[in-house]
Image (cartoon, rainbow, N blue to C red; front, side, top):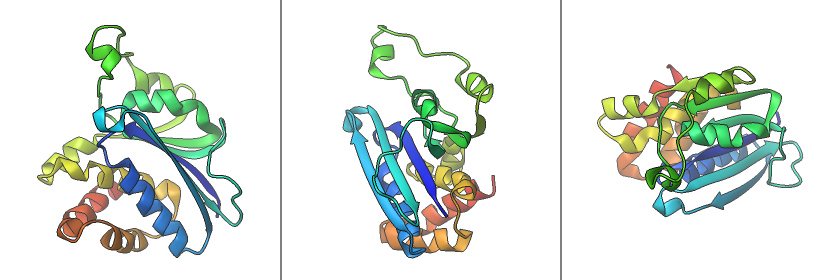
Length: 188
């Protein structure tokens, strides 16, 4: 099994936690793992991207353009921003939400319209409203677990393995809600 994965989103969406969970899943499966994180102004809502690569032999952590098997985007614009990294038969998993970057907030740029529709013309795109599911659970902070659950079928590993890793990774007081969020995403 070999996978090149990109996680892209906005600071505060829990992307680094999801990268850790995916890394633990790969390590538990006994495959070679490399990760790299790029933080923009992540604490101020800026772009965050993480590369996770695993397989029998992985030499470097960075996924090259056109080589990602899976891109998990936690926001539409981030999906567009990193879509050129997806390989021809790769999968783009998108949390269907809009978070305006600072350039849009101050009026210097406009947020692109019809992002998902445009991406679907050239890529295999799966989208979910993860925030709606997280809010239905009473905690918007589990958005990342919902999106991971939705993307998990494209990454590999058994559902129970994912749930065990979540239990070992997230804070003890949030285990149950994160496992439920993952399950809701997985079954969406």
